[in-house]
Length: 202
Length: 149
Image (cartoon, rainbow over all chains, first blue to last red; front, side, top):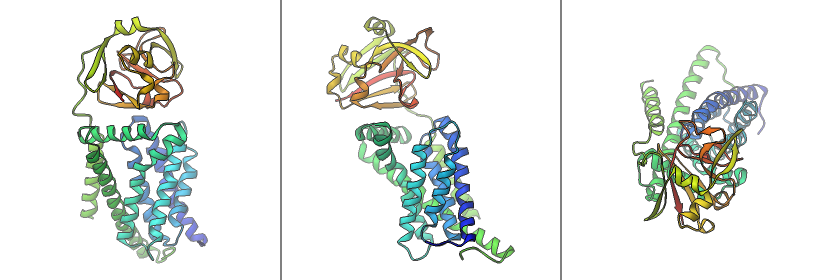
């Protein structure tokens, strides 16, 4: 995992983009108490991170982008940052591990990384709530069922359906994230190669 | 490009659907609080709660007056130490779940007033007050307390 200076700058740019989204949009979504705001932020952040991976197709690139975003999140004023910071790091790590299983980033690799990365936002409360807020896993599970029941109009007792719909929904959003990142990356690379002729890492 | 726009549109619709207001809000008599566990339930009015107790607790520099949740559950005929969790449901369908430790804390209140006067319009008639806890757990406009045995 050794990057050239140019690659580091490229990763820093993508990391900064993710960080800015977390600081600005993250604070707004937290303030308006939008349901699944973590999923929305993860989706946007992963589009940025996975697009960055296309520009620097090396192991560790996605995680590096996540770490930059995480550091920027520290400067978020007036909002809770520990949970989101764990989220950013975990999402980048999940995407990184997934992409590392492939020789090079492909559309399907990005879609799988996006799917698992976004799916993590469903799992994260089961880790952070007990650790950070001392809440029991059963109560977090009830929260998740309530959220699913409210969003999809399902009976809170139909827990299998609620869990299935939530998992499928998160995976679907993640797949679209990967698909978008591939298209955006390709489009950007084409435009840059047409004007500058050099693309870092490609 | 059209495909990308279509995808963005679908994602926007998904997000919008997630943010849609609850279409099936909990119906409740105005100004009453339903405490239930399965088929067993008991309804409380403001006067009923006031008769139960006047304990104070402070959340975000505002002092509230209300009944300890554990005492309310006892009065309704439930053992607060034997519950797995308790759910507070708001008029708009929003809900929060509490661990037994939180339920049995003496400063976990079902508030019916502020120390200096009535609850604000967007707080009342009943408000969950849990000092030192996240704002999401301090549910406003509570209409139901559900016990998960």
